[in-house]
Length: 229
Image (cartoon, rainbow, N blue to C red; front, side, top):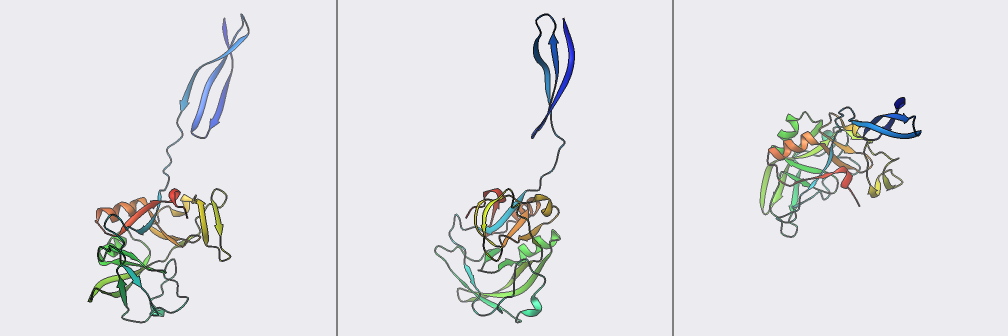
């Protein structure tokens, strides 16, 4: 004869395991039967990607040489609008790296990123908080307009320091990342931002898809969990 003597519930990271504990009075043997798995409530996790220069398969992208054109200590990523602090009619020299494939919609310099008018429009459509500073590019003997320094104004302190494995400089910037975990909730609803600890540009999954759908060139998207250096 079987008699139900109790129920157990065990919380698991992936859900709840629920079952009934039964007792066989004849031999006092206990056995668990009829357990089933209850899935947790659906929770949308914000996927965060880092926007980097895509140097494959056609080769390295041109490098935007800032030279002495920009004032010292004027941040151009993750900063409030800075156009009023910069000279007017900026023109930057663009240098080919090995096997360079020509100008792209997204290019980088040491301290800022350059976008084309096409990529600018994608970011505007996403309602991204970005300052666009018009510039010209001198490349292979020709002057090219329709390019902009893109300054994402949102600087987010987004690293989960309890879960990440990293080393920070005295200035608070990561100099080594062995494992990166972000506070995804801080990036919800944000198309593009700069992660304060890395000084790198982060984009949402929706922004990544929009940029890809627009066929913007020069863009590589790296999942935040794969960042290592």
